Length: 373
Image (cartoon, rainbow, N blue to C red; front, side, top):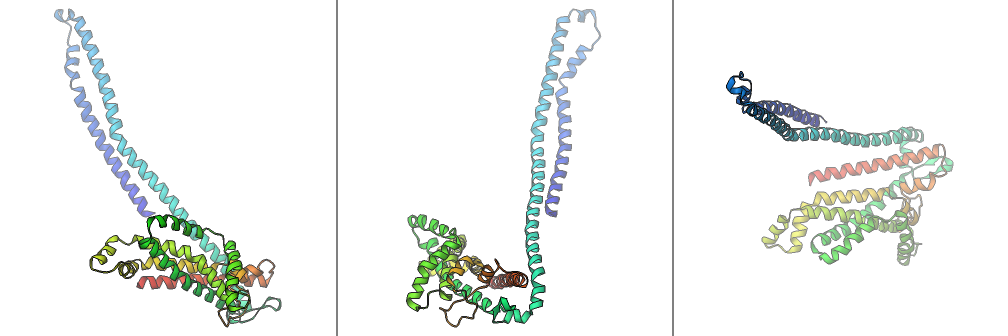
């Protein structure tokens, strides 16, 4: 904001200086345009004699010439004034527009900050007293969730959220980054025109549709091998891995394509193969963008509820194997918030605060790792 004000002030000062110079130029041009009128005016104002009285037609001609020169002078000055003022008016208009837009952008940024602060104020204002009432350690490390008996231990849900998110990111990141490399360097243009819209369409599919797909396809697939009903940690992780693929692919592809071509061409010129140049030079240069895509994918995996609630089994227990049923923090909130009242409802809001804190810590950890890369 101060920078915008200083630049606007600088333009205003330049505009006033230009106006002063403009007035001097107009004064000089007025003088030069009036010079041709002086001899005519001197002749017209000379005392009448017997010789000049016979020149009445000549005086009339002089008067008409003088009037014509005055008209030409006025139109010339008006045209010159318009031409000379145009750039300064444009600069003043641009400075005013920049100031208004800077105020608008600052207002939008402030609105985002206010929204985040309002969310934090609401969540922490409700959650902190509730956690203190239940007990910090009983709430975070308790292994039993019995709302009817007012026993609220969310440790199984915390473990379930972490396991589902980590497994889905491990599977989704590997497939997503390799797919982005293929689309950026190995895919033909004819195939690229087909695959890119398909990936973008994959990002727009609703979560509940993913849940139906997992229920019909993935649950049957896992049940065929594990023979446990199919709903559990592995099924939820596979479904979330598919859901975060578009985010990882599109952002990683953009980051890879943003690396200057000279890196790749230099590696090829030094004798590296195409695969070695891509994986050891281009990917290394694009690692910050790839890491950002993984962070965004993991954020979606932690916050997903509708698809996971259909295929996860929703058992508030710590899973002992990869095929056991699991309940995450998000599914726990969605399942019970509709009928919760009193302390039960406040505890579910506190679960949201724990989820919010997890995502915040995750972003801070990945940001610290990105700075070291």
